[in-house]
Length: 174
Image (tube, rainbow, N blue to C red):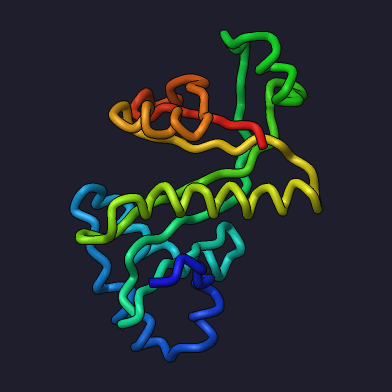
């Protein structure tokens, strides 16, 4: 299996609607049903509206083994309780920090262990390319409590709980 991700919007042009729909509908991620739902019901709409870009990891049988979604999304921080060096690195202006976003990250049931790590590395590499072209040094994501340690292993730091208090906002600087 190649790790070279396929852009969803490229597949939208290469496959007919039924083929693409069938491919997406076969994706299963029992660990994260929200990510499964996103790929099946929302990803195409976000591509069409230029909200995000979804990258698919596809095996030799044209089955989706995993995917990640990249976007831009600022991080609002009013009175942050963070180390001053972290705040300085965020380039805050009026309590808002520019950021790249890893919006979704999921591997299919039965996908090889370690695929998530490879997808995160690929996402961070893609953002590093963007940094060279456009600037912006912060990458953020939102995750559940049980994933904090996983993302910390990539250098992400816990920033705070989101406003709904159900996810953790984390960031890393590239």
